[in-house]
Length: 399
Image 1 (cartoon, rainbow, N blue to C red):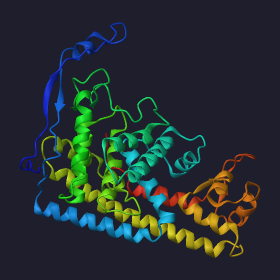
Image 2 (cartoon, rainbow, N blue to C red; image 1 turned 45 degrees about the vertical axis):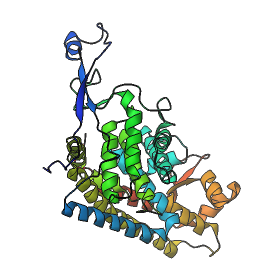
Image 3 (cartoon, one colour; image 1 turned 120 degrees about the vertical axis):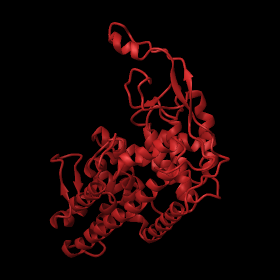
Image 4 (cartoon, rainbow, N blue to C red; image 1 turned 90 degrees about the vertical axis):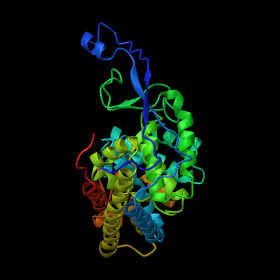
């Protein structure tokens, strides 16, 4: 276990009155007794004026990870059109999986078209929107930017809480009846705005190694837990906002969450250690996660390149045929309907089926709805590559 970094404070606690309001005719008396009386909420120290200190080896590894992210970003930057969207989606799906919101690539692609899909897939699409908002707001990471990310994340699935600081107590673990048996009780709601303002002031400092800064800012954000729901996903979106803000990435999103998925328990344990004032564990978790994610993402990109190149060998169409533009679209959007092809490529709706014909004849795409109207077509090879990426990032455990 890492020793506490010099001058980096552990969280404290304070006693807070609890008014459970548990109905006697619904909740057993024993449960009501366990959730009666005051509880202890976290007191989270501000960090904007503190400089995180980690050992030389940990700092060197974090700096190496930042260099690897930048190299990956540069390599992918020459092919932004196909791969930026793919990598953003894989990061969003991986971040959602950490919260046990798991969905296959086809369900996510269907949800992105606005068609009915699974609730988990729709949650992933919300996370894609949050990630895009994070990158769009990278110039000015601020409390307003954090609210905008959260709004993008939940406006379609939980509009009642989207983009608003919480007004009630939240906690991790235990039961839904009250915070008395929780693993962690976040600070009281009144503390949230000031603490978020503090962490965003920390986040724009330029005297801290970017991966160290992003890891610490993320851990502090999760400690604050500023929302009723979506804290983990919003906090991981913040990481990408900061990597972009500090110039580590410029073109694509490195799926860091896919690396964290490899050891979810280790990631959660690192957040717990941070609350004790131990910095190195969370920095190491992000460093390992970054390098693992880059390896996995590189394999995915190579597989997609191979898939697209293979289509050149089997599709029979004129060089100027719309089928080739649809093939390029399918690499980044592996499920399409007529509206998507028209919107993305300008192919008239009445010509979409004819444009797809060479791809259908070659087996590159298949129609999978079985409907005569509102049909959708899938590129199975691309979906398989995306599901393979998710399998490689498969979690060893979680909570």
